[in-house]
Image (cartoon, rainbow, N blue to C red; front, side, top):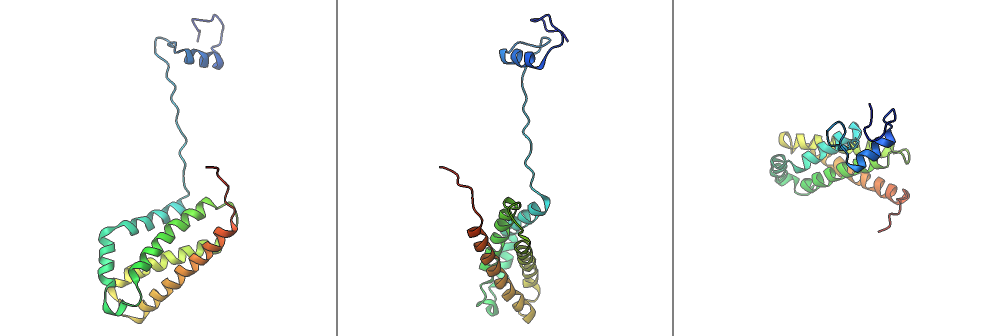
Length: 169
């Protein structure tokens, strides 16, 4: 490949860059630089949980069915709707926090607490339509409340002990 402006061989990369900056055509074709950004990928184990929790939280049809079933007279004292909302927000945001801070320490206990909370949420979500008055369901709702408070306590502890980098405003 010969350069018409310079009678040297080969067409060095530095020379090519300077030719491109000047906008001179190469073999009669205008030179354009195409930059491809590298995709930022999130690990599948974190992305799946966040996406599923978000989809459950914003699925209007499923939410309305849940609220209709949760308004039964024997469930008035449990406030199942707000527990579901709180649990889904916690699962989504706490999983994202665990992903962002995955290299800062062992968060195995915290990750398992979030997974247990998500499993309990799905269980309550499925059971409310079938057997909302059974003692097993009421026990699961009470366990859901305990799991929510456990996750909140764990993350309050982690947030206060994890040093966030100071970003100047």
